[in-house]
Image (tube, rainbow, N blue to C red; front, side, top):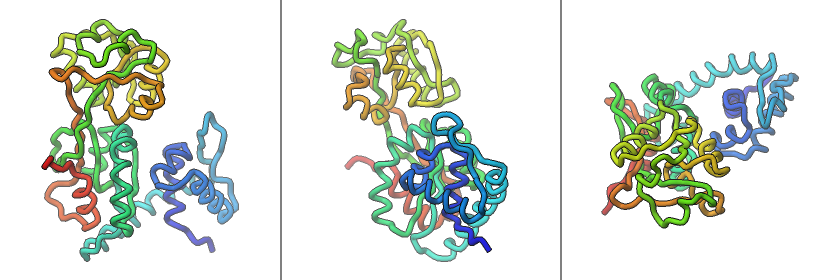
Length: 301
C-alpha cells in the first residue's frame, strides 16, 4: 500500500498549478532539487509518470495519471489543512501552518525579507505561500481558503480587516542609455509624452500611478500594459519605455546596472501602501496572530 506524504502532495499540486519548478520551490521554501526529488519519489511510489516535462521553457504539465492524482490530492490537502486549523484552535500553541496568498510583487520583494527572522523565531510554524492576482487574494481570504492575504493598495471589503503591512516608495525606472538618466531626480512632468510601460488597468498600482500623473498634468504615452512586474522591467531594460515601480522591486537591477532608478522630486514623491487581509470578527489561531503581528507595519518611534 502506498503511504501518501502530504508535503509531497502539496508540492505536486503546487507544481501542477504553477507549471514551474522554481516557483514551486519558492512557495515551499525549498530548493528546486528538493522539489524534483519529491516528484521522483511520488512517481516511484505509484509506478507512473506524473508530469510531462519540456513543454516550453521550464514548463511542466500533468500526464493523465498526474491529472488523476491532482484532482484527488487537492480536496485531500484542503481537508487536512482545515482539520489542522480546527485542532490548533483548541490550544494556544504557536504552531501549525499559516496559509498566505499574496500578489507577486509584494510577496517576492517585501515579504521575503520578513519571513526569515519570523520562521527562525517560530520554528514550529510553517508558511504555505501562494502567488495570486489581487481579486483572487481577496476571494481566498473571504472564503477561508487562505488565512492571510497581502495586497497592494488595499480597499475595504465586507467581512475583511486590513492591517497595514508596508509603504513602498515609488521610483522612475529607465534603461541606462535613456536621456533622462542624466538627472539625479525627476519630476512627473518630465515624463510627459514619454513612452510608458504600465500595469494593466485592473491592477490597483496602475490606478495609484495614474492619479499622480494626472495631478502633475503629465500625459505619458502608454505603449504596453502588463499584470506582471517582471515583464515591465524587462521591456524598460531593453529601452522600450520608462515606468514607475516600487523601489524594492528594482533594487537588484539597480545594483547590477541593468536599470537606472531615479527618485521623484520631494513635492511629488509618493508611496504604494500594502496591507494584510484577515477575516474580521474571527478568533484566530495563535500561529496566525503571531504572523500578522510580526508582519504588521510598525509605527515609527
